[in-house]
Image (cartoon, rainbow, N blue to C red):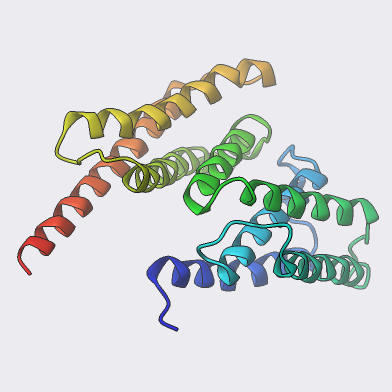
Length: 243
């Protein structure tokens, strides 16, 4: 069976991500993780949410989760078995094997499966990426760690560029907007900027101040995504016309 580009991309990301989280859980806890301000359980939920997301779309790239199908339960059982082995092995390499970590892993998997039973790939990726940006921005100290302060700029640029690109891909599939029209530009900006306003508006609730350099960096990332998408759409349509 010929693999389409999205399926290939998911397989590549999964091939990098799964060994990476295995390695990270079998070395001494990195200092940056201890200083992040995020609870260990939150990190487990996020890690296994992403793992379940990638595994599902690696196996069923164009299907939503249907709880009546055996495949869903088999995949969840496989990931759950891996989570148990992972915790067991951590107890053999100087890390602690914690049943509550296992419960957090299970919660992340079920949360992902629940989302994928309601939404297909692009809407689910859009919602998940928005939640991740919110959590990292307002519920962790990762962006304020010295001497890792450069993470702040890198995060705001890459996170909002990626979110805007995901939104535009979603928009291209579910609307009839044309890239040459002002309405396309308006809606391309609307959702990413709304996310930025919501995150920065909620910052005081988490004892965070609004950093206008972060806002400017995020807006630059959103603008970059729109420019990249517009050029890609334009060149793709021009190529089709010349065939």
